[in-house]
Amino acid sequence: MSTVPPSEHPDESSIPDEQWEAFLREAVEDGGRDAPKEPSARARMVTRRLREQDEATRFQVIEGGGRRRWWRRKRAQAPQQATPPGWRTGPAWREMNGRSSRRRTVGSVIGVVLAAALTVVAVRPSLLLDRLPGGHHTSSAPLPAETALPSSAPGGGDQGGLPTRKDPFRGSPAQRWADGAAAIEVPAAKAAGGMSQEDVALALRRTKEFLVDTDLDPAVLRGGRPDAALALLDPRQPHTLSDLRRSLRTPDRDHDPLQLVTRFDPTQVALAGDVVKVRGHMTFAAGAAGEVRVHADYTFVYPLVRAGGKGEGDVVARTIIRRDLTMVLLDPHKWIATEGKLGIRSYGSEFYNSECGVYDGYYHPIFPDAAPTGAPATGPAADPYDRSKSLADDRHKGCGTVTRT
Image (cartoon, rainbow, N blue to C red; front, side, top):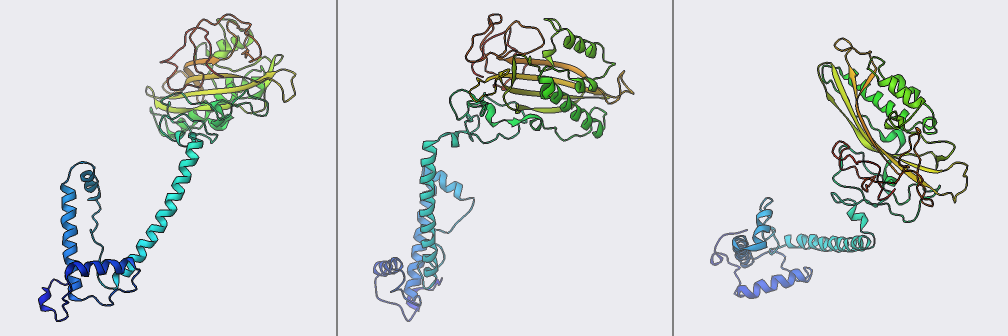
């Protein structure tokens, strides 16, 4: 752009600046049909003057108060010219006008898409709420893997009504949970507590095997013994194996295998299908020298029907069990331990929708069309799907009621 005074240009026009500016603006709006083919000195002078006015206006906006001042400060991170090059001078404005047309077209398309998106969200707000932090998930899309305890209890499922054989997780947050053993994801191993990466990987893998055999194996769920899980435990750990075997053989109130093993009486109930929903996570940490600890916190959801039923009209009940388990792998050179075997450092469990006061080694779900037959529930009401607190921090006292299954 020229900065020479207009008096030094022989082609200077006598048209006032205001009229020249109006003419150029009309030419731009008219699509360029009557625009000058080559900018005169007066055009260049008017362009420079308008640039200076734009710059002065931008400065006033920057110095103004309220929202405009903030917006300009934010935009200052990526400076842009108030007047794009050539917008008011010569052939270059044609190109800019073309770009403006494309922007208007794109803007119109974006507006239509945005309006459609807002309409969809208005009809199904869960599509948006499911993706907000702490939002209640009602979508049927699978959840990403859990890596830590959530901040709140989950929302319900999309569908209302009672569960069926065909849809045993209807109305349950577990609809979005992963299925079975695939939900128990083992974290990447690394050396810890003086144990090698291979040792840690072994501890993680065998902790998963223990959970799968005690809580997911079909034969065990039908009342069998978790022999594969028992084989993983260290026989040199005092009382662990002997107590668990005694509980499985002759269960009672003081020897309850359900603290570690999930079993149902096959003469009374059966699984509704072959899917158990699972949600939780596994971590590991160094213990004392020569010790790695693996912590597992998982909730299992079991859909059940009465034994002998085969029809689609069978009533479905859901029993929900949460396990909190810490296993240890010890270096036999530093501890009295068997190489490659796991010890149980601590365990806890909560089970929901099972008869109170029954200690026969089985869970007994309460069906929605029947009343409880066990001892009266005296504990507080609890949401079995709420994983926002650890069992250590939120142990429910006694046998209570559930807010949903």
